[in-house]
Image 1 (cartoon, one colour):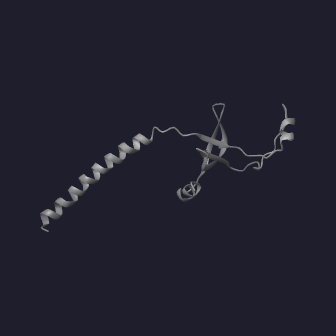
Image 2 (tube, one colour):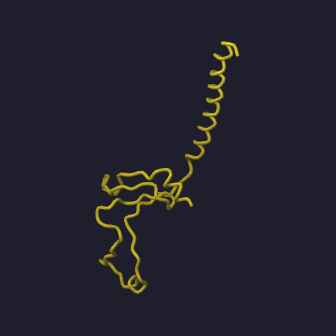
Length: 110
């Protein structure tokens, strides 16, 4: 291969990479419009039906999660992160403190 061919080859590869990147970007833009359900879970409890039927205004349901533990952030019912509750403009929000690793997220799909 001559020096001229070696010099031209990377430009060709770059052009091919740019074409692939543009295609990948268009495919990604298509995916960005998919709606997802995001849920923040404060905690869970298990109750007997007779106990559930007795609750009323002012009743307290004790959750399994301890006070101060991170809240779980679920996307389409799959754990993706953890965080802590915050108040933003008189509304509740969540400050993310931990993102679940990609490998752990893949394990959840099984």
